[in-house]
Amino acid sequence: MPSRQRAFLVLALLASGGLASFAAALAVGSLAVPVPDVIAALLGQPVDNAAIVLELRLPRALAGFACGGLLALAGALMQVLLRNPLADPYVLGISGGAGVGAMFAILLGLGMAGINGLAFLGALGAMLIVFGLAHGDGAWTQTRLLLTGVIVAAGCGALVALMLSIAPEHKLRGMLFWLMGDLSQTGAPWIALAILGAALLATMPFARELNLLARGHDTAQALGVDVRRLRYAVYAIASLVTAVAVTSAGSIGFVGLVVPHLVRLAIGNDQRLLLPASVLAGGALLTLADTLARTIVAPQQLPVGVLTALIGVPVFLFLLARHPR
Image (cartoon, rainbow, N blue to C red; front, side, top):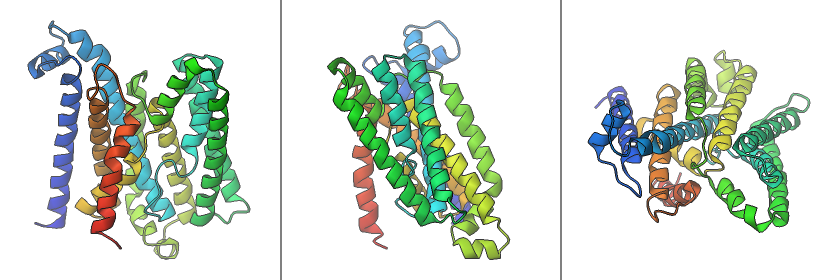
């Protein structure tokens, strides 16, 4: 089968998988809802358990798909920007900054709006600090950016540990759930979905330039790419979508690291196909993981970040064993 036909087949399968994971998220739970009732509820027909589908599971499924897509898109962009297969959305300290803001908000006793607001401000602050320090006198290299992000992330981790150590016991559970990823308190998922769509539309016009950048700075520049402008754009988009995802769902690991690798194995490294495929795969994976997180030990719920780590670790080890180079 030609490579282009195979790529579009993979995209179709990923879209189908996304719809299947979305349907499972609406139907499966501590109270199972038959699929015909789910469809009727979505169409506005009066059925039993319509409130469960429309008010509880639908917003959570939309938020899970949006956050998974955002993290996978950010991971794919970061791996091109840093030319590092271990790069993920959190490598530049964005998650750490959001964690500092969220933990401080919880300590102050603020509601979800305050937690989300301070988390986003913390992520934005970390992004600006990394950008400013890594830029320096203009010599912005992948190594300098990566090292700056690691140091900022370590500092944010220390602040988070400090706040956890002084927090009262009745606030520790909420703080830990946020740090491990939790979709149960997501507010308006439409904002995250809109930002996901806007970010994907913004990256697609320079997907060809990303292909050239993946070959190296000198190669891309020799072929007419404005590498400086492209790096700024990729860093800004990847950081902002990471900030939105972390603000909406907390720190959820391995989605942005593993999903682009899996998609790359299936369809290659053409960013014109890799970016939308990563969005579909990341959204489906996080939606499925969240469904498992709220059903495995129902009526109790697990942090979704635990499930993504349990899925991501063996998958990544398998990839390393199968493709040692």
